[in-house]
Image 1 (cartoon, rainbow, N blue to C red):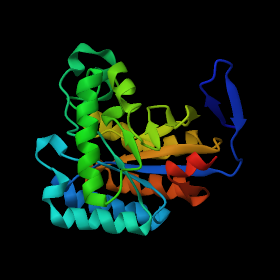
Image 2 (tube, one colour):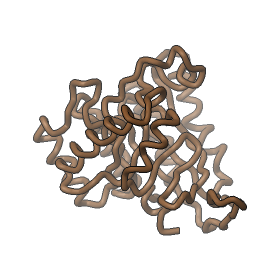
Image 3 (cartoon, one colour):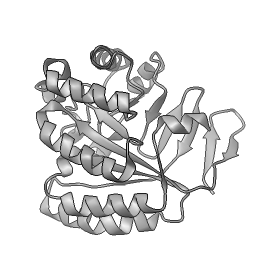
Image 4 (spheres, helix red, strand yellow):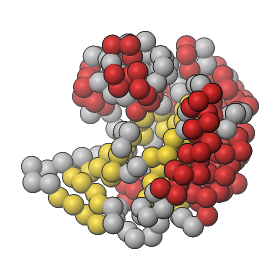
Length: 254
């Protein structure tokens, strides 16, 4: 049985429900890759309906500011109204300091945006993205996920000044008040042929590996298409067949 850990001086644990669930998230949604964003969204909705979390990059690589793309904004608002959870995924999704960090080298290539930022710089970027998304949606984004789940200490401190309902990390989702759900994630990689081949295998092995868990995350990325379209579809089908689909915000009620 999975448990919820709280950050009290004396660690406390709370049993999570025994019903098996799946938390599906779509990363890197941007007008720069609008067609692929829509295609993968449609794939997810065929299996999960609107019960998934969409991570939107406010200005992908400094060339995809969402509020300058009316069709994209209308699409986001329609999904939000339908019940899809919309969250903030950094600001630019562009880093550059990964070469100085082992963690950065392992988990991303040039996109660890918040890996080495000071509290002030991180706060400024989060604030700008938060404002852009709030203006587009007519309400604040639900939560925040840093690109590649990489956070500097300054970023973690800066996030305390925002009213996000949750913050997602590589191994967990944390909520207001410090309640943290430790949840494993199945994620894929497409940067090299070798990683794509491994991802095809992992699309079958990953969901099976966590079949005994009451909950796990399936993290999809827009750039997984087109090369992983078939294995992603299979992973979605396997993961959602016997599980209840939920969003990050749904866990805040527990």
